[in-house]
Amino acid sequence: MQLNLLNISYTYEGAASPTLDCVSVTFPQGWTGIIGDNGCGKSTLARVATGLIAPDEGSVAPTLFAAYCPQDTSIVPAELSDLATDWGSEALQIRDALGIEDAWLWDYERLSGGQKKRVQIACALWQRPDVLVLDEPTNHVDGETRKAIVEVMRQYQGIGIVISHDVALVDATCARCVIFERRHISGRNITAISTYDGGYTQAHELMTSRLRGDEESIRAARQEVTRLRSAQAQRHQAMQSAYARKRNGWKIDRKDHSALDHHKWIE
Image 1 (cartoon, rainbow, N blue to C red):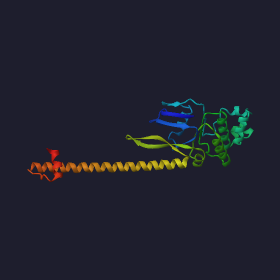
Image 2 (image 1 turned 45 degrees about the vertical axis):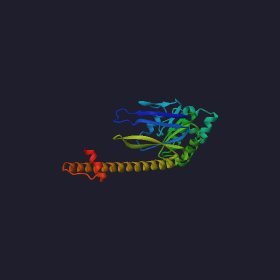
Image 3 (image 1 turned 180 degrees about the vertical axis):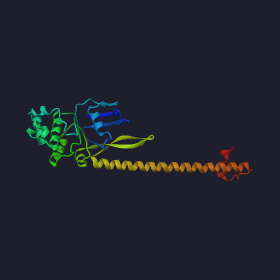
Image 4 (image 1 turned 135 degrees about the vertical axis):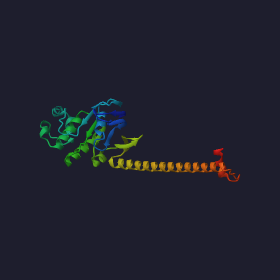
C-alpha cells in the first residue's frame, strides 16, 4: 500500500506564486517525515495528501481514508464524543497506549497542551485511517506525552506522515524523509522536494552529500566552459594572425603543421 501524489500544484488565493509547483512524491507504508523551513509548503502537501484540499493540478491515488491531526491543540476533534462513548477493546487500547484518563474526554477545554495532543491523536487513531498525518505532534508537550506519541507511532501500521522539526522524533519513527529544498532552475528559484532514506539525521547527511556532489559537478562544468572559451579564443587569434600574414604575402613552410592547420580555415 502506498499513496502517490503526481505533478501536484497548488496556489493559495491571492498568492503571487504557487506553494506547490508540479510536485511528485510517494508515501509508502510506514512513517515518512516531511522536513523543511516554515512556510515552505509542508502542511499544504500533507493536506493535499489527505484530501483536505484539492490540488489545482495533478492527482492523488489511490483514494484512501485519511485522518489529519492538526498542530493547534485548541481544535477539538470532531470524533471526541464518539471516542468518549466507545468502550470497545480497540478504543480502550488506544486510550491506554496514550495514557488517557476517561475524564479527559469529557473536559477537553481544561486539559493541558500535552493532554489535548494525546486526545487529538487518539481520536485520529480511533478512526482506523489508511493514512495518518501528525502535524508537529511534539510541540510544547511534556516528556511523558512525547514518549507516548513515539510509542503509538511505532505501533501504527498504515501510511504515516509526520511534519516535525523534532530531530529525535523523526529519527525514532521514520524510515524516510521528504525534504523541501530551494533550487535555482531555468533562471528562477523554486521549491522542490526530494526523498531520502532514513530518519532526519541520515536523510540530512545524504542531502548534504548530494549537494556537495552537485557543487563539485557545477564547478567542474564551469571549469570546462572556461577551458573551451579559452581554446576558442586562442584559435580565433591564431586564425586572425594567419589571415594577416597571408595578406602580407607570407608563405607557409610545408613542415609547419600548426600554420598549415590555421591556414586551411582562411582559404
